[in-house]
Amino acid sequence: MILYEEWRSQLDLLFNSNVLQSWALCQEIHLDDKTNALSLRLRPTHRLQEDTKRVEKKSLDHIQLCLTYSKIYNEPLLLLRIWEEKCTENILLTKLMFPAKVESLLGVEGKFQLGLDTVIDLENSLWYSFHPCDTPNIVGDLPEFKSTYLRRWVSIFVFSWLGYEGA
Amino acid sequence: MNDIKQLVWDGELNVLISIDPSFLMKGSPKEKTVLRIRVPRETYLINYMPFIWSKIRDFLSFDPLNDSKKCFWFEHNGAPIRWNYPVGVLFDGLVKSSLAFVTSSEIQSENVITILRVRLVMGDSLPPTVIPITTSKTQAEKFWFHQWKQVCFILNGSSKAIMSLSVNESRKFWRSIIARNLHDFVEISNKISSSKPRHIPIIIQTHKASGSFNISQPTVRMTGLDTTLKDIEGDIFNAKEEMNADNSIIICQGIEIPWDIAMSDMYLKLRSFDGFLYITLVPKN
Image 1 (cartoon, each protein chain N blue to C red):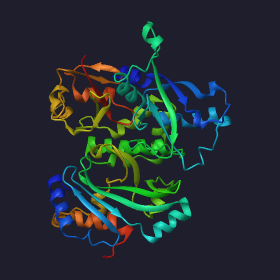
Image 2 (cartoon, rainbow over the protein chains, first blue to last red; image 1 turned 90 degrees about the vertical axis):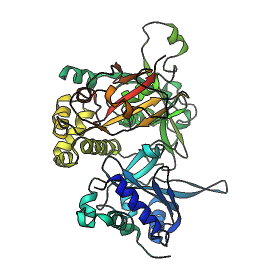
Image 3 (cartoon, rainbow over the protein chains, first blue to last red; image 1 turned 180 degrees about the vertical axis):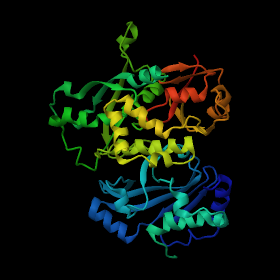
Image 4 (cartoon, rainbow over the protein chains, first blue to last red; image 1 turned 90 degrees about the horizontal axis):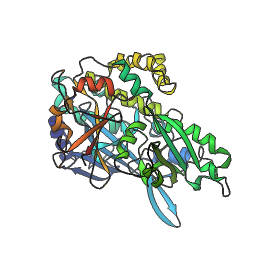
């Protein structure tokens, strides 16, 4: 568990550290002061692009992540959207994609549980959320390591399945 | 209390589902485009998808169960409906915002049967606030269980109670919704609930002047057993809105609720089948 104020302060530290900006997959990053959410636009990994073609018969455009906070669980919350590229009448469009087996496609099966939900704090928009109820067990919330809680959370919830390589 | 729970559990709505003609082959009988069913208030609309598909299967112009390019959703009066709220909550939210629940002839006659009118539509992409209806048989169950996980955490401060349910108990819990077995539902939900909750899981829909409504999920801390709705007025109303306890009424489970009702009592009697207490705020006329 991490209190909201502490999470918000660690989110600023994370943003200012440039770890995410230096990530090879990161195309855009934005910290929204109004919603207190950090949003990222990511280039899909080669593996994910290939698996989507093979399994879903679709072409991935980008992955959208939103790092926010769950006031219910008092934990960081990872939201995700998958955007596919679609050609209609010679016009290229992007649209949200809802794979039949999203956890399997992302390679997080058995590791994280994902659910599709509308997020009230983000104008009821539609996102996959990584269920945060096991977060303290996964990240470890001993008081002596509290100051790096969000950095460790990002390392597990984001980099462990997307990989991290500097730009 | 059991009598009230039974009444809430037994509450039903007449639902008229019209099927958009784009689903059906040209020349299909017109009567196939309308289904009239009676639906418990305490269930999800998508629990009726297998029934709907079975009724129109022979006239479909495509295979909805295997066509991943199309998206389906329900609408009321052209506005998308969120299936992830209980049917009764959808009705409470819509009934005041629209007169279209009844036809013009029904408005004029007395003793009309109230009908929730929805339309099943499809498109290449979804409205932004709607969860897609998939062909998975466990979609509703998974969503509902996730809701209960949140409820368990809000009530008890941990998900331990729900995660301690055996596989058989979890199945029995969901089956109680489908088979309308209140006894089983109460038995399992009592294992998750606390007699002295630390917070109340509450979802509020508020009508706006435009005819749409806001959804909010405030954190309502229980400071004592006698905390009333009036006591948490500040949590319920958005400071930016002009609504307050004096100029609005509260609807819960289809009935008007007094502001001085004790929250804990109201929660235990009137909560929905997903563990949340849904209230609808409507401006007084």
